[in-house]
Length: 126
Image (spheres, helix red, strand yellow):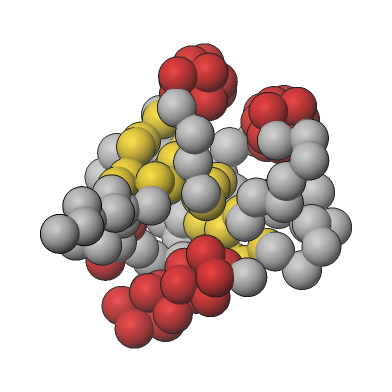
């Protein structure tokens, strides 16, 4: 008898704790860890490994660049898929560093469950 594989881990850097979509669609199939700020995200990176990152576009660009640099330092020899989540309740969202070898997707809270799951699954299998 084989042991079941643990679910893939996703680190979601999302400052808006009220934003539940698209994250709620992933909780049954993936292990989500939430970071509400840069410090929490860097701590999570130092304590665990993740198969995918979800980065809020509502973070200011300097913080996004800081996190992207931390991802790059942690995974020097590995391509890590990144999903940028746009919070439609925020007036300004910025997407930085989108040259990631075709491994970047953008989701927003109105993205349907099926599209959210398909996007995550395709990035995980690439």
